[in-house]
Image 1 (cartoon, rainbow, N blue to C red):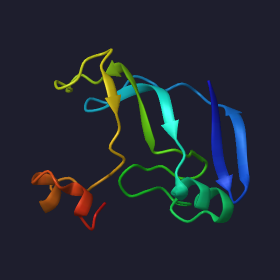
Image 2 (cartoon, one colour):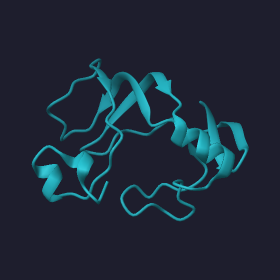
Image 3 (cartoon, helix red, strand yellow):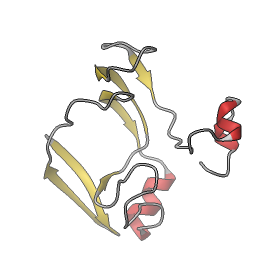
Image 4 (cartoon, rainbow, N blue to C red):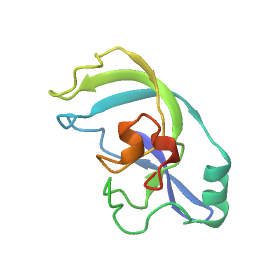
Length: 117
């Protein structure tokens, strides 16, 4: 599949990448239908890496090169065996926050104000 990936400041490349494998037990795979490019993405493109990790991210393991665009929606096309709240075909919009498991604010449904976001 094709992906437009950020490598460094002003360096985006359209590349062939492997499609996602089967999802991990607690994950879903989303076929993205819409994606917004916000100010964070523009700053990253012009002056990055700022937020893009050049080493494996502590929660996700991701590092450059990556696909920019963290505000997106689509349909679930595969679900992990431990997922029970979603089904294949569900339409979803993504809340683009990552928090440490067990975080005080996440447990209360207000993870967006956590200092671990």
